[in-house]
Length: 137
Image (cartoon, rainbow, N blue to C red; front, side, top):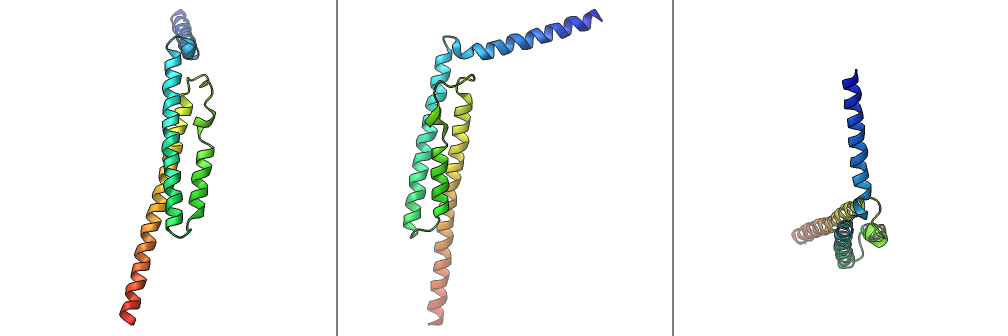
């Protein structure tokens, strides 16, 4: 019985001290480098999302204003981007912001891919229609 109490007490102490290290990680001298690294990662993904928005907008005008919903969705993704409200990084040294920025960039890339693929699809269908009209006429 005493053995179980010692093991349980040791486990609780290990959990407590490991959580204290996690909470104090950003207040240590190396904590500021973690915050800066995560902040620069979030800013990089913001810049890439901005480039994706520009590309989606270009495709919108190149396709004669088709697919406005994708442009709006890309803009909303940019407004929700964590790089705009990073601040001090929070308790996890900004790890959540960096991960969120990565996922939102993935959504921006998906919007770009969707707009690009629908453009190719429209070109193929219009080319087929043109060929059919050529055959008939």
